[in-house]
Image 1 (cartoon, rainbow, N blue to C red):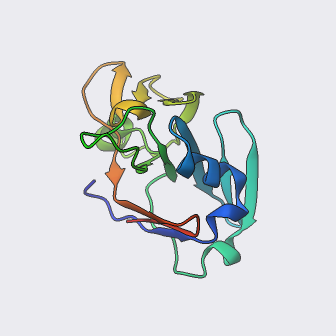
Image 2 (cartoon, rainbow, N blue to C red):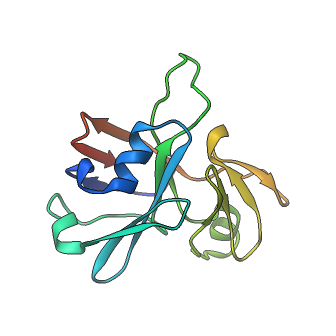
Length: 153
């Protein structure tokens, strides 16, 4: 993505939704920010809020609308199940009108925009699966080490 992004969280094992998403193919976790908390939400709606001061030990997060991180059920070209990170902003709404309404889970590996109703496939590189246009989700680099720390940038 051409947008600046940063989020570092440790320890990953302290948040069930994040730990599950990073270690199981086909699982994802939405990461959203409020003034007081960082919320980690699984596709089933289960959420773990963490006080923002505890989550910002490594610096202030930068994002457009939040993040969705996880491990696709489809392996990459090296047949590895590598973690991925996307912004929660609908790329069509954001690039056309600078609207940053957060995408919501429609299924375990599908996000839907509540504004334009486009859907995006997390198992297939964030490609749109319905709606007009062909803009993919904003993708960021992610690193993940030993159940300890996840970094999105």
